[in-house]
Amino acid sequence: MDTLWLEIILMITVPGIIFILVMGLFIDWLNRKIYARGQNRRGPPFLQPLYDIVKLTAKETIVPEGVSKFWYTVLPIMFILTAITGALMIPISILDNTDSFVVGFTSFRFDVFFVLFLLLSYGLLIYFMGYITKNPYAQTGATRSLLQVLSFEIPLGFAILVPILMVGKDRSDFILGEVSKNVYTAIGENPWFIIGLVIAFCVSIIVMMAELEEFPFDSPIAHTELADGWLVEYGGWRYALIRLGERFGAFFICGLIVTLFLGGPYIGNTLALNPYLGFFVHLVIFVVKLTLVIAFMSFLRTLISRIRIDQTVRLAWKTILPIALVALMLTIGFKLI
Image (cartoon, rainbow, N blue to C red; front, side, top):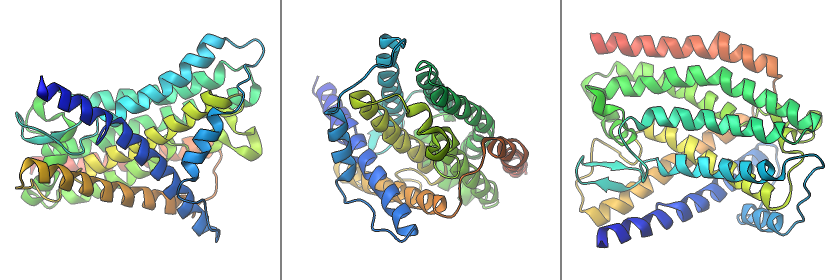
């Protein structure tokens, strides 16, 4: 019973939902700050993301005429719950005594494949949220978003397979926590693996920027073309939920990159520390790696202007997919050798 209550407390506090909320707001601030500095602006104050959410919850909510109020309310809730579910799967600092590696709250066997399903669901919910509003701008943005997600989902799957193949010996290795623990060991045993891993890491960065609809892949919400795209008809607390869902999604997606390609909460294969000290050390290592990934992605978005949706799809199928296949083939080849 004591263990159960401890798990509930951790799920709510650190590294649970409250931690994810704080990190989501921090990601929003860091992203906007770096982007502003890249444009020679000061950027927002540290607490600005929190002020934005509080302000949105106090605004009036208007349901467009002819729109189903049920789906108009349920879809934003499903959106944020999907993002939270994915974020809770990321192994941060909780040690599983049975398997001896750090796991997420919702980790289970073959959870890597469930992560792909969550990413696809994340994109589908964006499409439905825009489609139900019956606004032409929103529906156009939703269609662009769905097309973008479907185009990048296959390259993402190939990129994710690279670290899995590196560490995999049997079916039990399809676990995020086990991949993050053994990725450094795999490189130590076969240094050639790092070639495929670096290529797959670069592919995943590009794909995840498209998943988050960041520059240069923000055509679904292009302000100058679609007046905020699929978000145009949302306001008040529903809009606040969507914005929070996007920040939780950013934590989930960037945390996934850290887990699969950068060793997650590990510096080496393992940390010989007592459980309490190890908990905080794992947490700090993960946060540092996550911050570096966010900063890198934010820096990239300052360098490239928006590209059209047809250019995005062409990039996904003609460039990113072949590169992801090369990374996968190299990893398979090094594995066989």
